[in-house]
Structures are given as structure tokens and as C-alpha cells.
Image (cartoon, rainbow over all chains, first blue to last red; front, side, top):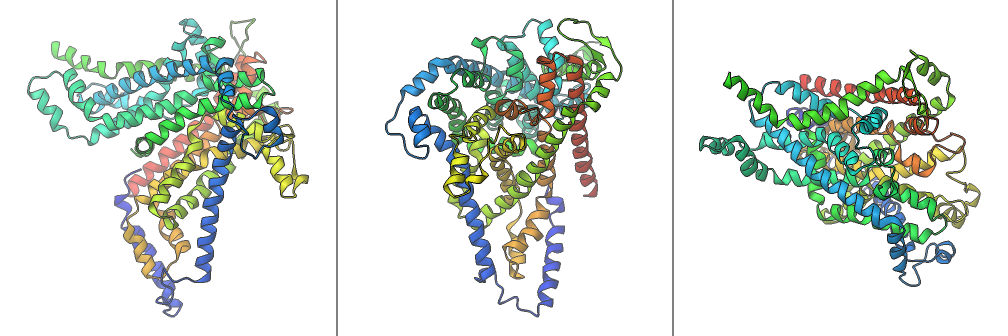
Length: 311
Length: 295
């Protein structure tokens, strides 16, 4: 993916010669058609471009703003004045949502997300170290196994997993989700960390090994700390995945007290039918942690996404 | 002997990852294909071999074809919006917008991708509500009241309303990835065509489109396989209704397994999904490999 450089020189020459020919046939008016020349057509393109950008901001943001504003209203206001501001800030909607189940769902989401972040990043970093730094038998088949995992879709496995999790007695426990969220994210995360480790200088950990450190020590004391930036990216993407995952959480958890937010909120919807403001308050509570996490760690998020697709 | 043992001991690094992958990812997928040739349910828990019966059932099940069609439409619309339009959007962002504002817009567009599909789905089912939803109210406000629909309650609009929500959620995500790809294009290329008098539209087609080709391929793959894996949004917004019109393969799978109690049929649908997404992934591998050879 990132390997753009080899092809780079071909494109501009191709593009260059073509545009060159075109300007030649239009009898050398190139000077008049300078980039910054404000021909009406270009002005139109510019206006259209801005219109699209602004319209999209409205379309993207308005539903979210409406969600937050409506969660402070009462039913009469939501139905009667849907576009307006709430007449007062009714924080008790949030309290009510919190006690109507969001408290449990939130706690369960935190537990499952938190633990699966630790297990996924550690196990993946471990595997990535083995694949990049250790002379290991079967390293090619292992790499193939991890790569192949990227192509397999979670829901396809749901019926055998249903039997498997019951057979090993972790069905309807936190472990069902933690184990699956870890297993299905290992391919992506290992790939991400491996790509980063490949680019790290080998001399540092080799020097440590020369000085008599064991491979274990080299991993924990040297390589893992050096990988911190990519581990942060990996953790953020895992958080996004686990916090929002729905299919496994729906099928493998049946006790109401263990449900996570994506499934619990749907249950709440059928319990609170017409109480829109409280439901919207619940949605807002569920959405805020990831939005905040994204705003804080934006750069790390994007690095994870682009590097992960890259190599 | 000890040397050999030490060599094997190094496998400890990959052992946890490999074990988890084999037990919870690979085994279930293989087992699923096997189970698709059996029939069983909660009352007769011992699977009975039925050969291709489940596949024949699928072939004659019109809901199966509806679901497959809906997935296909999901893919087509997502390709147009999340690949086509997102690329234009990314180019416009890079071309016209001052750096600081650009970062802000990118952030804003990306936000819907960070909230869960459940949250987005419930939120949009409020917006689509026939009496109180903002969509119908907005239509009346601009004099298009006759266009009002019970968006999620009518057979002709349900799946399209879900698809629209999905575009709202994902366009920023793909646009941001395109922005990253565009930023990797050396500026000199643009300056070169600029000197030749090319405007923004022509430099988009002569430089941007060919230079982000790799990202385009990747996003095409991701979008298409994503469209065949849709589940959460449909479950939350319509659960396949009304009258089975908005089913997709995954919701049909879920209904067959946990409501119709026909596990073998569910496994068959899962196998179909597996084959589709796997073929798409293999095409991706083939395409990227060929390109590497070309270089």
C-alpha cells in the first residue's frame, strides 16, 4: 500500500505529456489559463466544492446535535419543538437513563473493552516480536495463518462458536466476549505491530542480547517500550471495536446484567418505548466516551488505520 | 537435542496468538461449512446429514434472494458514496480548504464513524419516525410533504433508509483515508500540470485519481465485503421487516438460527457469506500481487 514510490515517476510524465499535448492544440493559450486565473468555470467549481463541504457538515453534525439537545428536553418539547433548544437542562433524563440500565451496560462495556485491549495488544505484540526478531521454526506458516485471519468474517463463525462456547462453559460470561474480541482482532493488531517492528532498528535489541539479556528481557525492556506509539494506536482501534461490537454481544450474552451498551440500548428502546428524551440521553452517554477518545487521540487513530492497511 | 528443544521453545512467542486463532477463528469457520450439510435444532441436538438439502432450500427461498439483493444494493450504493463521492470530497478538502480548517472538517466528518452502529441506528429510527421524525418534518417544511414516508415501515423504503444511515456513518471514514493517500502524492506533480494550465478538475483526473489507485482498490474491497457483512444496522432499525423486505444475509442467518431454530440452514447462509467475502479477499490479494510484479 505505502509502496507508492516505485510507480511515482511514471504518473507525472504520463499526465504531463497529455496535458502538454492538449495545451498545444488549444493554440498556446496556456498563459491565459493560469491556475489562479478566475475563469467563471473555476469559480463555479470552487463554489460547488464549498457548498458540498458545508452541506456535509450540516448533514453529519445535525443529527448528533439534535440527539444531545433532545436528551435535555421533555417529551412535549421533543414532539412539539423538535428544532428548538431545550427550555431548561433536564439532567434528570440522564440520571433516569443511567438507572434504567445504562449503568450496567456501561460497566460491562468498560470491563470487556478494557480487558480485551490488554489481551489483544499484548498477545499481538508478543507474536509480532516472534515473527520479526526471533529465529523460529514455521515462521512462514504462522505468518500465513495470521494474514489469513484478516480475511475471515466474525459472523460466519457464529453457529459453531455458539456450540463451542457452551461446551467450554464460557457462554453467557464476560469471557465469551473477551476471548472472541481478542481472537478476532489478533490478525489486524499483529499486522499493525509487526509492520512497526520491521522498521525499528534491530541494533538496539541485538546489543541488549549481546550484553547477556534474555530474549524475554529484550522484549519487555526494549522492544515493547519502543513500540509505544503503535501500541497506543492499536489500543485505540481495539477500544473502538470492542465498545461498538454488536453481533457477538447479542448472541453470546443472554443475562441482562452482563449485556454491553450496543445490545443493552436496543433492549432499553423496547422498555422505554415513548420516552424519547431518556432514550436519547442513553445514546448520548454511550456515544460520548468514543468521541472524546477520538478527539484526544486523533493522530494515533489515523496512524493505526493507515498503517494497518499499509503493509 | 537441547539445540532442537531451544529452537522449538521459541514458538512460545506466537503460541497464544496461534492457539486463539485456530480454536476461535479457523476451527469455527471450517466447522460451519461442515454443519451446512446437516440438519438439527434445539429439540434434536444430534445433527443429521442431509447433503445439499439446505442449499436447495436456500435456492428456493425468496427471502434468501431478497437478502442477497439487499446486500448487493448495499454494496452498490456504498461504492458510489464511500468510494466515489468520498474521493471527490477528499480532493475538495485538500484543494480548496486552508490547512487549519481542513483538519477541523476532517475531524467533524469522521465523528459518526466513532459512535456505535446501535447508537446511530436508534438515532435514525427516531429521525425516520413517520409522525415525529425530523426527515418528514423537514420535507413538509420545504413543501415536499407529499414525499413523506413511514421510512422504516414501508417495504419500498426500509432497506434504502438503512443504507442511507450507513452512508452517513461511513463517508467520513473513507474520505479521511483518501485524504491520507492524497497527502502522499508529491506536490510537484500538481505544480507540473498547473504550469500546463490544468484546473482543479483536470488535475483531479490526471493526478489524484491515478495516484490514489491503491487506496481506491483497498477501499473497494473493504466496502464490498462490509456490505455483505451488514447486520447491526438492520437488526436495530427493522430486524428484517416489514414483511421480510429489508433482510440481509446476516439477519436471515440470525433469524434462521435463533428464531426459526434451523441451525443447518443458518450454517448454509453463513457459508454463502463466507464464500462471497473470501472471494472478494482473494481478488484483493491477486490484484495487489499483480501490481507488485508490474513494478
